[in-house]
Image (cartoon, rainbow, N blue to C red):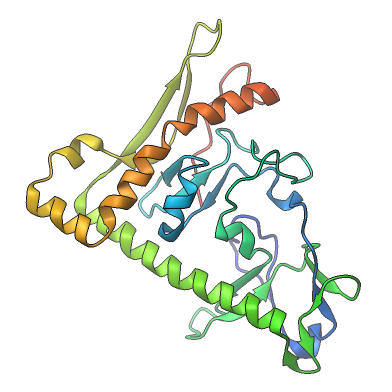
Length: 261
């Protein structure tokens, strides 16, 4: 991106600028004990490399639509994150998705037809800025070790995202995804709380696969990922319980927002 941000920015990002030594030579990467930018986010993209760690803490679902992506569910309603307080401080230790740890940086094409990705950042973030505390990003016109580490993390994330895209393409080929729905009866409410707007693996289709198909998805690593997804789903009820404790369950349930990347 040369000067104009993309029309649609990814979750968390409010703006994007290319990081340049000539413009941002005095910028520093600042400490981030809290993450207020994360406090009202109910779902973030997840890579397949994170499934095993992530499934211990929150449900892994797939976004609705024709091009679904894996998502970590942090809350069941728009604007609700049960893992951090309003200032972004964690209630308890939990696995923070790489997507969140990458913020405020991002590899992006500066022009739609560009072949190379450039390191960009969100200029509205308090995690980067000129002067003050933090690690310098440039030493003159040269990147510091801090900046090289950030770039390496972003490059690794992109590679993981490519593997995730290949996994999702295979799921579509196998026709294993179905629209998800969870109904939770809570307390004295006459009507259950119903959550939709996401996709999940159809267990019956998985059970109906023949031996050769199962052997193939086990050998290529897909089956363990599907198991991690399925094992994570009961935590939807755990998150509902946390929302109840925090007083963040709507009195009358509106149609929930579709989970989206």
